Length: 384
Ligand code: GMT
Image (cartoon, rainbow, N blue to C red; front, side):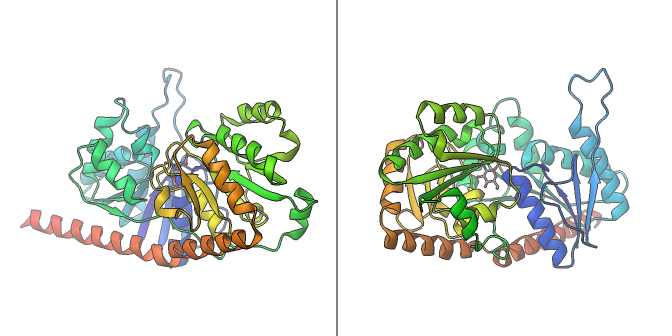
């Protein structure tokens, strides 16, 4: 198939999923065309089947708000026409689903009927999408998509709850490439971070409010009182400097390292004992899956789709968002007993294996084929 992928090219979860999906599809022999405003962060390899088409937006002085959605729609028209794509797959509804709808309408004037698949990732529904500013457009563009997927059952249910959706939504969970995310021998790194054998706790995110990064620091400040430990904070974003200040206020600065954005996250996870994800809302929790694949158990909130990934008492523990006390207590429970920690590590990996790329990828391939066939049948019936 010739597949067009639209996503945010940043370190955000939806962009990571879209890029890894595109790379895996290209490996399977499909031709994959990324259409974004920047080279996606993880599109770091050369493959004969991978193509990147940049969307550039005019910065004409009249535009206080450069019209990205229009530039994207125009670029999509161009790419679909000239590369003869079979399907467009847009990740994150805003503004990708509506740009794809516009492109689809324009393409019809050229006699081209391209099916559009929209994947809902989380904040496009739970946070930004249901805001009045976007709601009518999000509802419309989801209903106009030829196929819709959501990354968890919980996100599917939220979508039906918050929007008037007439379409079926297929749940295709996020996936993990176990050849990349697996325990790596990084003992020298572990020794450097934790020279006296301290336990290593880790958090990776984009440091947005929804991640409750301040809770990560507060949990750690409680854990370190009972268990000699270190905290690694990976990623960057608006809440980082507040967290750095909180570390000073709580007197834990010497035991916390802010590592910023990192490419080789799997190496950091490989030296870690426990992953913290206290998010306010989380449709899936890809970062937690990456940790579990590297044998790191998870202390998380029970928000959104997290209970589908982190199994309470098996791969880690879940508490209400904001329950710092409860999360710290469970973190100590796991870390204080070596045998128990080893069991949780095994369980984390075992459950992560259920989300292996090779299991999930065919679900997307089959869905594309189904949507393409339905589109052909619709056209045929219209012509009769
Ligand atoms: O987590 C973020 O803030 C980024 C955001 C995105 O759309 O890029 O992530 C969402 O999509 C990820 C991939 O499907 C999910 O793993 C995250 O749980 C989801 N984030 C939220 O729902 C807050």
